[in-house]
Length: 308
Image (cartoon, rainbow, N blue to C red; front, top):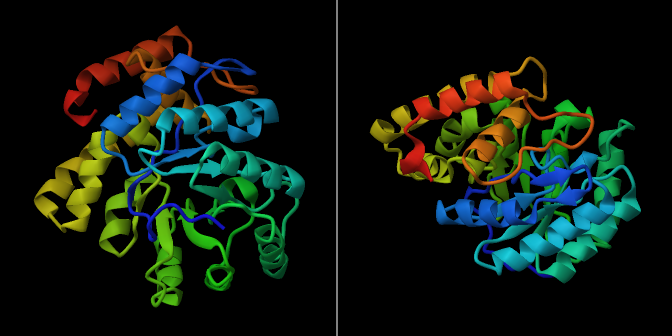
């Protein structure tokens, strides 16, 4: 099994949006601009086909195209992590093979959605799928969407399965993080990343390895600077950077009225910044003119040139 990055992986790994022209057409130019934009901002890797990438709304042919094109464009400058979460075991395996053949560095897997799995069933699932994995694997704790949590004891056991090298936690629960960290206190090689950007500084200060932060699509250097300040425990820098990230979270991500507002706001901002299309895959629609104008106003209030 390949392991082409140094463990543990550290830093800021943006979960890339998937630039689209329509429901089944990739915005190829936008994807290239987005990749170059984030890499220029100093990020430590890229994660495609995650929640922010709308993976569950994309056809398999589009997912494959995205994997192949992203790996081609990145050219091994930073590690590429590919989401392979699916309700069908065989489809996750197929996507992992595409990722391996395309030159990706690792894959990311949340529990299969729709059916709720017990913890023993999750462990057996991971053991079976790892016998088919051509790349190292990160488990992805995303209970708000999968309705299943990787319990701390399950994570500890999973870390001993050959090929499982880390975890992304999007539970937004620091108590959970502390439990997992304690159980894995002797596993310095096991990567532990947090999803919610509002918690990244505290997470890193408590021993986490970094953030898989959606806002780094827009302002990569802001999140990289926060990570570095947190590693160095430089609170004079952490406080203003954290305040800026909270302002983004409470403004750009909250222009709409529904659970999709975060992603609509993020994609709208990227569109207004001239990076990529803001088309949303079904069942969602991009912001209309009123919301778009609000996002434009918010961007103008941010002096964001120093963060990109």
